Length: 552
RNA sequence: UGGGCUAUAGCCAAGUGGUAAGGCAACGGAUUUUGAUUCCGUCAUUCGCAGGUUCGAACCCUGCUAGCCCAGCCA
Image (cartoon, rainbow, N blue to C red; front, side):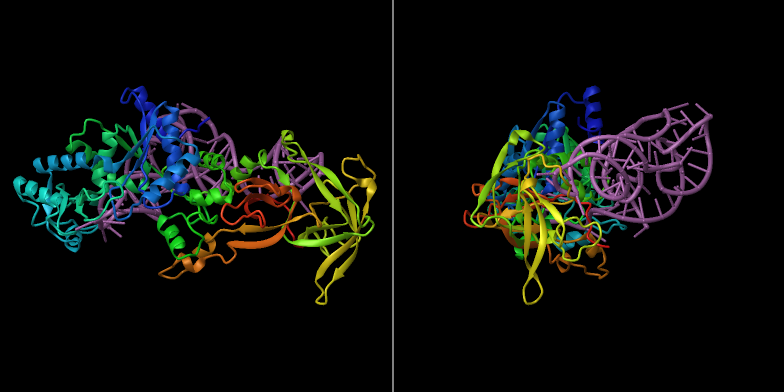
């Protein structure tokens, strides 16, 4: 079922060799923003791997920086994880462990492995050296254990201002791995924490906190993304020097990238804050709330991520692959219905004026259990503007003067007359129908190449359709040679197209998040934000594939 | 130019010394009341490049090359 990857291989071996006798993983988001599909990969890997080996997974909020975090985000993250289909064995907060972390820092000081530094931020940076040159020791590096203990205690008591002192691990200022050049492990921040309020004014840094959190929770395999690879030696150093009983192992995998998709948290935040998109749940951004609003299903996302695999590489998966799994998931579950996005009126001149009838239609030809419905049909209908061409190219088998096509679930019609306005735009078609060709009658007299969808003009419900395209196209981004390229300069002006059309009358009870396939258009769902009973709004989730190309 | 990591088809990715899985995309063809779906078929004599070890190498060794990550009191 699940495919082979290097993480499973490692864990399997750990279990077989007896290095581990159980598997505990964790998904550790910082509650400083909304989850996106990149986080979904992490969730799926962490929970998935634990499931495979009968282990367990903790949801842990890595809330060590009160300046950026908020309860709003913890609530949203919990909702998104559940929506994706996962449930955690334990819900934890890094802030639950602040006291323990403090004690471990004290232990480090006592061992002479940490010191309080008075250098300011700029000085610390200057002393750190560069990628190619070693750093040099801080003048405060050799303070006595007693002095350090005293200072660190006073830091905790709030005697010092933000930025005036930090606690640093004492390792090696000339290490080729910059993370070993006496990393800062505690900073002073007089600010209110969403969880611990004002009880702390010093907060541990990620590099110090994360390994301790994992060890405290008996996490066996700490799975994170590859940008943390250089941190691994430090992670191990912290676990060992802090004398943690439990020894978690960090393993890194490559981030998920998708073509034509803005994935960085920074950029997403920018899009939301500058109002370029309609909030964190805008259907054009890959946040889980955005994908949910657009109509993507958790199953499709899971399947996509699984098929995409786990490796250390950092390529970009084709967005077509995501779309494929969305169609795949909706195929059997979404009822078929007809919707006209860009209406063109047809008058069926030989259909009696005040007559009307109900035609039977299957709700999903690929899933008979979904039953049938009745659709009204009468003299005036709407079809798609694209389904008519006055002067068509070869191999166009939709409607054109003199051509006959099938109306889905109804009759054959033939185009006789084209009505235009003063500017020469086609505004109406006059057609005739052949009663003999009624759908389901078994008529085989002649064949027709095209089948069009339609709605009955009299009973149709006006509806709004929102069609999405990528916000930023990789190709356009790549064409920008400028030094300070800004992705905001390349926002696709067509990322959202809104059109007004019609849907079948029996769609009147559709509720937000209900998903349908509009025949020949694609999968759509009812928007949660703008749809009303009076004016339904449908988001296009994904179009249908099409081999039809209108050129030649 | 210090350190870490990666390199298998257009894209993602299995593969762990015995002769290149799978998915996406693409392209043929059949079926079709969605130009959809479904079905059937095609798509790496070669694994970044060059050497070496071996009866045998994508897998081991050496040397190159390219890409990604690291110099927050962010995570």
